[in-house]
Image (cartoon, rainbow, N blue to C red; front, side, top):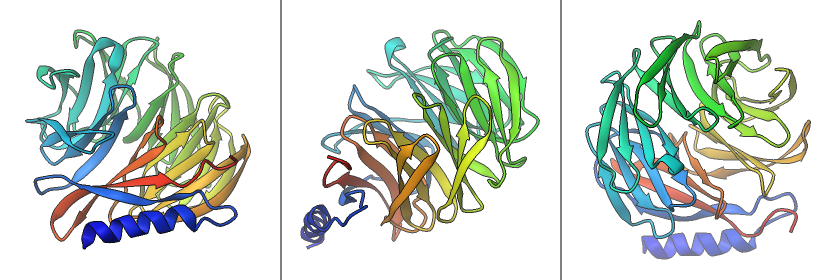
Length: 325
């Protein structure tokens, strides 16, 4: 009966779009064995895999079928996952072990462990330098190491607690300092802080996504605000209300849509009209506590992890039609 209800909701969502609707709806859900919490997740668009942080391990699913592919064990306090497909490497922050686990993308076997600062959380791979930047949430720093061999290149003192980071692949890195309500711009080649910006009216920025073409950053802020920031100048060009306890943001460059997943059980969706103007389309209901997500830019689907009655699962949000088509 449960599967029939989900199918009915999917069909209803696909045909009940209204003007201004994004077309997104909960299409299905995937049960993931094991109890425990989760944090960030990431989609490998080309290899068609979804990597989900899950308590002390990372569960890997087939992005198209939802079937389990494998598990990367022994990642205590797992938070973030970054991928370097051309190098065949993946990287997992193990917050309780103060290290990053390097694994093989094909075999999912652990290759090495890199010691970091205290409680590494978010992590990002920078293609411009082939470096990995692990954000040490309790260390107020970033540990930087070579993605190929794990050799540590240095530590960047940030002056606050980093929460999330993105890279543009051109030598630029941006980091949210949640406790300072600041945004840092880092030169990934020199490993120096190039700019430090205040982002009012955004308070406690926790998530971030990048429109690399239009040079816009989308900050999800804990005071229930989305702040749109010029990535080069640091100027806040627009802000809009969103839900409570945002923890993940994404941008779909093909559909020109911005997503924010919030802990009150919604994904807020905005349309990019131009680099400085955005239209709120709708909140798509997920489940209370489901504050993270990942976007598959190939299929435009969203993966949202959640917990219900002690059972861990992943919701798949799909769209009826491409907005503007």
